Structure formats: C-alpha cells, structure tokens
Amino acid sequence: MTRSQANLTLTLAALIWGISFAFQKLAMDHMGPFLFNGLRFLIGGLVLLPLVYLMREKRRSRNRGASRHLFWGSAIAGIVMYAGAAFQQIGIIHTTVTNTGFITSLYMVLVPVLGIFLGHRYARGLWFAVLIACAGLYLITGMYRGASLNYGDIMVFAGALCWAVHVLAIDHLTSRHDQILIAVIQFLVCALFSLATALAVGEQMLPATADGWTWILLSGVLSVGIGFTLQVVGQADAPPAQAAVILNLEAVFASAAGILLFNEVLGIPVLMGCLLLLGGCLLAQKYPPLPAAHRA
Image (tube, rainbow, N blue to C red):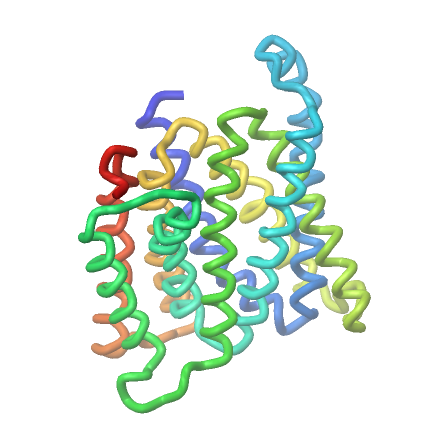
C-alpha cells in the first residue's frame, strides 16, 4: 500500500468513527454500555472471520501466520480496547457527542506524551502543543465559567488515555504480524471482557427493542468491523504521528453528526475550545521523537 492509499484509508476510518459516535449515543436508550460494546465488538470480529480465511495463502507467503507473540500482543491490545471503549461508552451517556469526539481526540496528544515512558524525547514545542490542547479542553468542558468537570467528560478522557496506549500497541504489532488477525483477536477479546462485565454488573443481556439491534449492527459492522480494521491496515504503512493527525479528523466528523442529528449548539467558547484542542493535537504531531543522540 502506498503512503497516499494509507492516508485515505485512515481518513475513511476517521469518518466512520466520527459518525458512529451518534450510534453509540442513541444505543444507550436501549441497553447498558457493556452489553453494547460486547455485542458490537463480537459482530465486528465475526464480520472479519471470512476475510481471515480468504487471506490465508497471502499470510503463508509472507510467513505471517499465527504465533504466540501475535496472540498475546493482540489480546493485550484487546484488553486496552475494552477499557477505552468502556470509559468512552459510559462517558457518552453523560456528555454530548461533540464533547465526546473532541475529548477523545486528545489521545493524539497523549501518544507522544506516553512515548516518554518508552524512552522517547521530544523538542520543547511539543509541550506548547499540549498546553494549547489543554486550553481547548478547558473551554469545551465549561470550566472557564466555574463549572466542575463533567463526569461524562472525565470518563471520555480516561478512554482517550486508553486509546493512546492502543495506538502504540497497534504500531508495535502491525510491523510484525498480519493486520487482519490482529483485528479479529483484539475484537473478540474486547467482546469477551465486555460481555463478562455486562453479566457481572447485572445488565440485561439482550437489547429489548429493534432500534437497539439497529445501533448494534451499524456500530459493529461500520465502527468496529470496518473502522478499526482500516486503522490497523492504514497504520501498517503510515508513521504513528502521521496516522494520529489523520485519525484526529474523527472529532470534526463527530461534531458534525452531533449538530445534524442531536441539534447540538456550539457556543463561541466551545467552538474556540474545539479549534484549540484540534490545533494542539495537530501541532503535537510535528514533533516526533528526537534521534537518540539528542535524548540528553
């Protein structure tokens, strides 16, 4: 895959994810967050199983079959995905689609920040980008007018932290293993943990309405089966920082969905906050890790 094709693949993933925030919000009128995540990730994994079979010869020719490292690495990525999806889904119940999209986009800033714990060092400009993003978050959450941080926003931010870890995990795995196998394993692991949690907390284990099944199917096929797979495939040929810039567009698409489907109104402070947060996330990608010689 060429770099341009990888960029287009990641853009399509961002579009699907942005729109899918609306499905996630609507689904919460019909079921609990863990059941929703469990069923949609299960569907996403099952959707890809035929592709795993059809691409078996290609994997053999590239010597990219199943291995212990693939299984355990993908399983860990699935557990991180479970945590990220859980925080995000709980959060979206208590906040807007727009806030969910833009706060989730903070994981683009958190990717290089977490890289520090992996031994990476960055130019000072990165911290200016982080400051800009934090200023945007300050305006979006309404803290500028004395409001306390919304519970939903806190949950979504915790999810963003998990998604940053997930981006780093996927970058490590796709350089060694087949992307489709990674996607299927992590989806099924995420589904297993989500359904087990739904059972443990006493959620109703099946949606009670046809609308509930509609949102599960749309989210499972589009957001999970197609969207996350496009991320895995696209990241195989795009550097993490560049992938982060493109995937950041999901916040813009989510805001558009919130305005069109939920009549969400963006006041001037919130709009400024969205622009600052988006700008900070994009600026952060201009500061990749410094060469080893500069990591003093």
